Picture 1 (cartoon, one colour):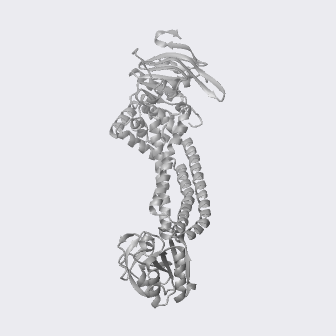
Picture 2 (tube, rainbow over the protein chains, first blue to last red):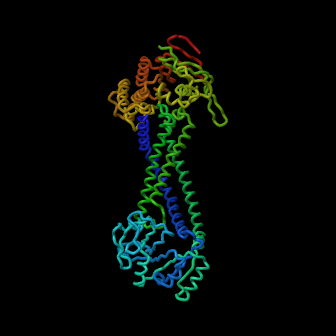
Picture 3 (cartoon, helix red, strand yellow):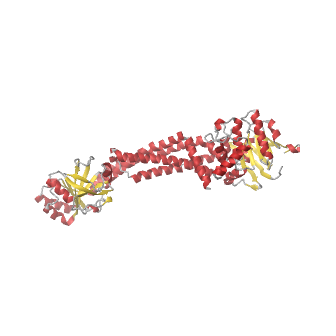
Length: 366
Length: 235
């Protein structure tokens, strides 16, 4: 039985080689056809991330106090005021002068409560010690800048050790919030501080009122994450839907094209399959033969797609506008492979309709 | 000649549909093929002889009637037909249908590969078969390097690969010159003498002398069934 399967496999490879032109057409039509939907899916993921970023736990009661002042961290009045409801604060600045990093990246000061809001997990190394000059760098930045855990980078003229690699891919560096705040303050670097306070809107207004007595309130804003998320979603949903429709239509077009090419391919191989049946192969064996052949086409097209997007991920700036993990590309490639392989059933259905004798006796095919 | 019946057709009819039009090409055909016979099926073009051969070789299914193989009705077990074809029958076609990308040895061993026979055995048997058809030394050649007669010999060797009981041939000399035709027919005759049952379609009356029986089909019916050794006419 195994000998038979091996022989059928061998014949499938031969058929694949003989009909290389039509197989190349099949592979390329899948490859080029699927590039567009994958791009769109990547972009939709990116858009979704922008929407989802604003959804935190207990969003209804969490207000954001956002300030452009770098006087907030370490200010005892402010700290004391918001202490009962304080959740988390971070400080962001876009840096372009980290000597070891060419890409525009975001430095984020984090404290020990960040986990309540963001799922930053290390895929290599460990979490930072919030009292030491340590940092986490995201995996994409690490790869593109050829950095590794244990390297040192200079932020605002201060050296930080990379102790861990995070699984995010936002070109983001995380440093301890308090240390980072001190550095920024000392060097008068402009930054944006965002403070999360878990309270009602009414309480937030009271805070603002209290702040106005001691600090410049012009630099403070109260924001509700739900409102922001809704606004974002309203704008982005339209684009997400349009892109999804385009992705579906393109995929359907690819599938249609796939079946047309398969039909054409079957026409070329009809005689071979009929003779093979006359020589003792059952329709089931023929199905296996077509399956092997299509599987090979699927593996090549899936591999090409995977290779193409991996190259893009590694070497192209366009990846910034996409959000697809290697596993996702592998999954899409595998699904394509599966569709191509399962389309063998379509060829068999076509083959079943015509008796072997009719094909063999067709003088035009002889 | 052995009188054991290998194939029996009982009231076989075959019709084709072309849109709303239904054409019956075979009308209630019944006859038996005994082991060791050399049967010719002859008739004018469009008489239904190729359809009959296809039904005999399990390459087409009848619309009506029963097909007995070694006294077992296999008409309804369509799924087993591939295995039965492989076990009982060999086919020789007018257009040879050799795989051009494979050499002679690989072409001959193809049905054995499909039957699950191992590589060593396949090669050994293929060489023996090529010797039998007079093509020793042609193993590494490719079909496009062969003459028509040689191609047909390869095709015969391929048909014999799984030691069939019945060899079906659809105008095997149709594409050959007279010398090659004669050589090929002698080869069929030799195989028949060794016990192989041969069922062949031809429109060339000069070939009928090689057979032991001639069935004449006209307009989808058997009009004559002539057993040469009995010197008589049967229907």
